[in-house]
Image 1 (cartoon, rainbow, N blue to C red):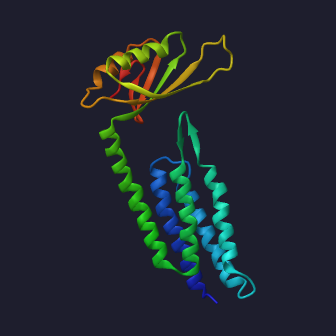
Image 2: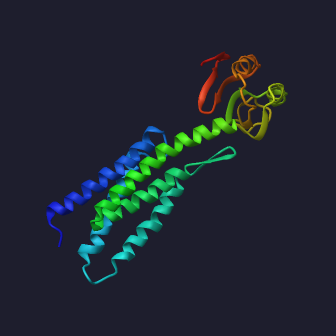
Image 3: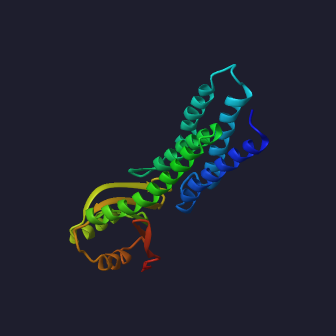
Length: 232
């Protein structure tokens, strides 16, 4: 039977480890952040303690643990979002799943496994993000979102400008805030593009800022044009 001190220690450690993973997600503005990861890790720890201590030898401790792992799948599904042609939230869903595992490990007393897993998760989340950014620069792929007032010929004009700079459009999606075809709407045009090496994008930003209807442009999550003016 666990002592009160050991019980509290396991719960506190699980909350701390879940918080460490959640903090990384929080500062990157992901769907599930600090509180969600703490609750997942803490709840998993509590369930594991109950399965091993409260029921004793009357049941299979692994049964409740298995239910936690499968149940986290439903929670993780809520963090997965579709953004145009892109899917977001898969990494956050995975960190929730791992947080449940960390909580289960802490609940059964495997502190070294829980701490090591948390450290590895944080290392790969930070380190691999740096590698991904480096690879994007080498491949010269970019994601561009253009927010504009809908008008005839807008997309063609943007495509012509990209073509002048030898930029290849790989994917494109359009979202409108109006269901009425006769109403002038605000649109979000998302592009996945391939850029030729060693190109100065400032002249392109300048030309885009002069296109009638464009309000602002987000280039690889950085606002480069706002209210028809270059903002970088």
